[in-house]
Image (cartoon, rainbow, N blue to C red; front, side):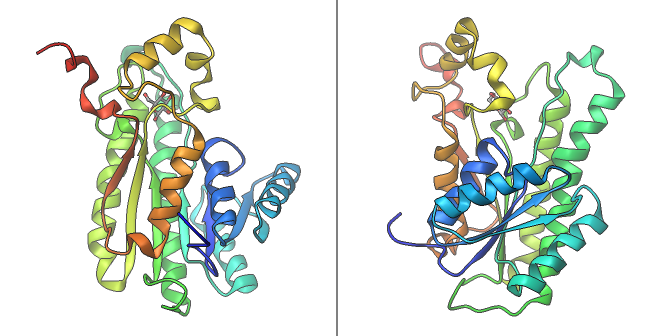
Length: 268
Ligand code: BGC
């Protein structure tokens, strides 16, 4: 996209210290947004992020808060409001994997992934909407009063043996997003999701860094390459901008065709 499609907007991206979140935060800064960097304990990481954002041409604010709790999340949004008067874009992106075969999966790993990938997104999105409602909306800056973007996954749709906690969380996220979108659209709050396919980040490094694993991964991607965090960041800029103002309650799959049943290409 040309120019600064997010000029004057204020964005919060969770899980922005690395991978997809980091690329989104930097792309938002290059697109003209001011970006909030949230951290729990590692001030150093947040300072690094701030520096990355400044390098991408944006303004950044580092705020310490534990956003896995409603109170921590509220504290974060209140601090941003105090500094910047509100927020226009919230990307609920933080996510983890704790993999095991169904019968070997511990209750702890089940809960951990549901807590971060589904409940964490719920808490963050609820905090975002509270903040949108409290703050003044300037339609010159953003047509919508506020935008929430969830980072989902192709596994909101593709069953994933060995990762039942992750697939269940992402499947839940799909209907969390759609239900929220339907409840809030009349307030001019736009809720959508991006579903990345195989993107080369730390989360799947064990697969793409291994020759055999990489080959198998590529067989699942009709477009013939593993994705980069920037592929997702570009979609996230569009989805946050007024260019997508009529897009409500949609999941944008950015997956090189992974959800097209690639095993059917030469069969069926
Ligand atoms: C997972 C990755 C995986 C990709 C495609 C993502 O949601 O986090 O580990 O490579 O889906 O299967």
